[in-house]
Image (cartoon, rainbow, N blue to C red; front, side, top):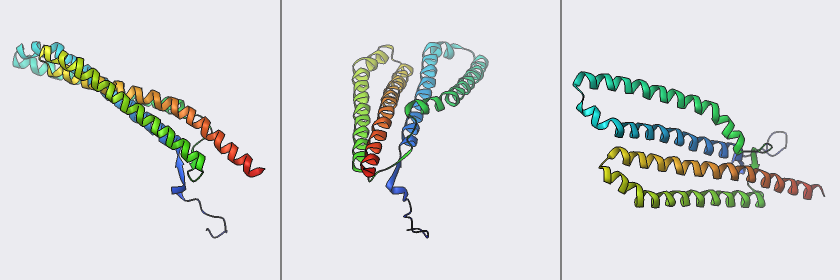
Amino acid sequence: MTESGVPSRRSEDYINLGSLFRSSATITFVVQIVAVIIMIGALSAWVVGDVFFTLPEDMKILALLLASIVALIIFLAAISAFVRFSRRIGDAVVGPGIEEVRMDTPRVKAVVVLYALLVTLMGVTGFYTWYLIDSNYLVAWAASYNSLSLRVFGLALGAFFVALLIQIIIAGVGRSATKVIIEVLDADDSEFID
């Protein structure tokens, strides 16, 4: 109880669903950006790898300097894309009208648990699907060229694929969870008023 006699709102009674969905979508977006940068680097290393080792030493230094400039430009472009699209992704994931909700409401807790289970199962399915693709096709592809760069490319492509899948699922789940929880809360409020 507070001094005014009104019970204080304890933070453990509430969950900030808006922040949870937004931060999950942002993390997957960061994974996608890093995966794309690694894929570009791995493909570049595979394409110019043999040529690089045949260059004289002074040309190798120049090539490394030019590669560093290109890498920094790619990182700057990635940061710009992150700043530009992270807010849009956050807004697309969570619909308006919901931020913090009480977790002691039985129906809200059930909805949150079911949606968390759905996201987890879809994430596990995405990881397993990628594992099958990687072990059956990409490992053999990289081995046929005897290339570590292609192996790194395959792993980064897998990270991108899984992050994109989870992001799509979170976006769909976030929107529908928002609607369902708002309906549950409205139903609870109308029962309380009646």
